Image 1 (cartoon, rainbow, N blue to C red):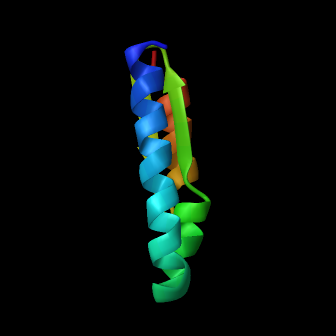
Image 2: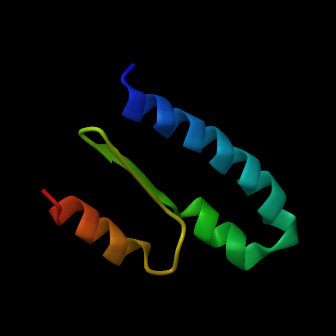
Length: 64
């Protein structure tokens, strides 16, 4: 597993922990966490929890 994939796995673990916390505490925030964007591109890891994550993902995808 390369470093980017290792970081991605650690972020997934963190997401799972936040899902548990936010599910009952803050439903609006839970929706954002549930619909996160997490991807790698070469050595880069992109992680977004935002109402505008689709726009951010587009910028990441278009970056060279």
